[in-house]
Image (cartoon, rainbow, N blue to C red; front, side):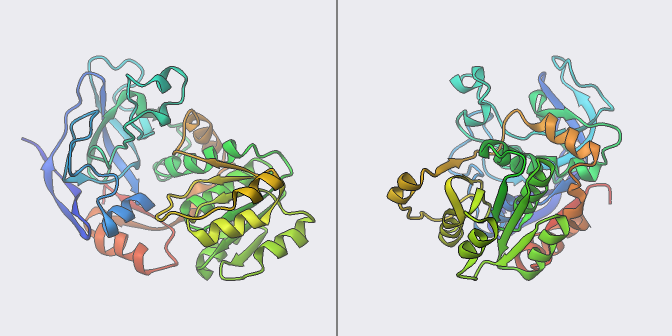
Length: 353
């Protein structure tokens, strides 16, 4: 039995870097030698308050996974081995992974809306993931990377796809103005995608001064302390009528209210954050102002476009990386740093260190 080191989730505040068995691919699976894996907000939530998406009480229906889990769903690497039914991927390919599971029996598969199939699941949450030297994934999850894309960039394709899908769902047009609430990785990537898509002005709010500075660095035209009670008024004064698009990447009552009030009449709000608590909403206000409010569930059919944007240099996702650490330090210098250090944005784990 061949063993490898992996970061394994046992419970909230209990992640252990330990030896585990190297996985082997089944007939429609691909084994990847991981290069870099990013720590995502959902990983952080599993560390601080889990289990949330990790199946503990009963197995995940699509693969039987349950309990202790190797985390990590934002990763890149090199194909090590493929199952005997895999046709489009070969050993040695440089790849990134779209980690969402698809239920083949769901009616949403035939419509192309595979992200809506149930039960919802992701590599690194409902299966073992990329905080390990090797990982096995379904063949439909694997996307080849162009040679000019670095493995570090490849590890940020997944969160960039979340941002790109949110902008796509918003219907944003060239010249539109965009407000983004929350300057974490998804919020900052949304700023970058909005710029690449032709936004004329981008407003960002956050509680962290360091993250607002980062928002300016990646291209936001205006930033606001989220505690400012006059954000909506200021955005209306700057634009003349309010923002065309609001992206909520914070997911709290205050961010939602500020964003809705910052929209122009007829504007569109996209909820990309995972709201931890229920919020209240004035439906009459939405009706009278003809506001559109859209939810997004991860992404679908957008990885190739995101890979092309990053590969072309139009989406410089590497600017978000604030630290690169070895697997051994993932708890102290990874999860704990993200909890306690507001200057940290995107931390990558180098699986070859």
